[in-house]
Image 1 (cartoon, one colour):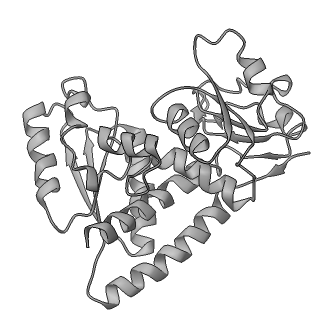
Image 2 (cartoon, one colour):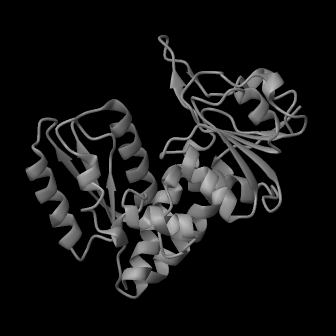
Length: 282
């Protein structure tokens, strides 16, 4: 039976370390600040904003929430973003995505200031992630995956890792971060002929596709470490991951639950990136 590796102990440890650092910064007259930029009233954006704000403020980071109407024009959105780019008191900017159809994300990602882009939207930070440049900002959710693996002592160097999903939100960045740590990485995507075979080769298996309970027991090798990034809610409001938790738990050595897994670490990583941005800017 797998050990259930929850996100809370990981988040608590990072929170404790960040709180001490920010206490010292404040004692010297400094103040790290996060600005969130949200368009409209999407429920998942609001929930993430609430969690990120609560975590940041608990650690001692100031948060400014900018909420724009759902029908805002691209021109007006850019104007608001440029204000945050130019505001010297703002160290990190988090733009909630996806943006509405009238706003061209491919344009916006080239406008956000890379030094304030704490969730790897800018191509500059994507490039730095690819190169393993530590001055860049990796996406928060994939970074949370790495924090969990490290906290629970999972050996990454030399490990066989399988990533199911190839989105820019989870799959590709996770694969790159594992590769940067010298894992041997396989990625399965929507056109992969035998996804289960790819999954079975992973000593570390990371899943992020948005399909409830897709990964079954026979997809998982004996003793694998399974990280489930999926969050799915059914019509009755029940939450599940992309992994069939009850069955896979019997075969894996470690497994993250959903909820109380990767998601609970993501907002803490966001705060960590704000502090990093503050230190690099000062």
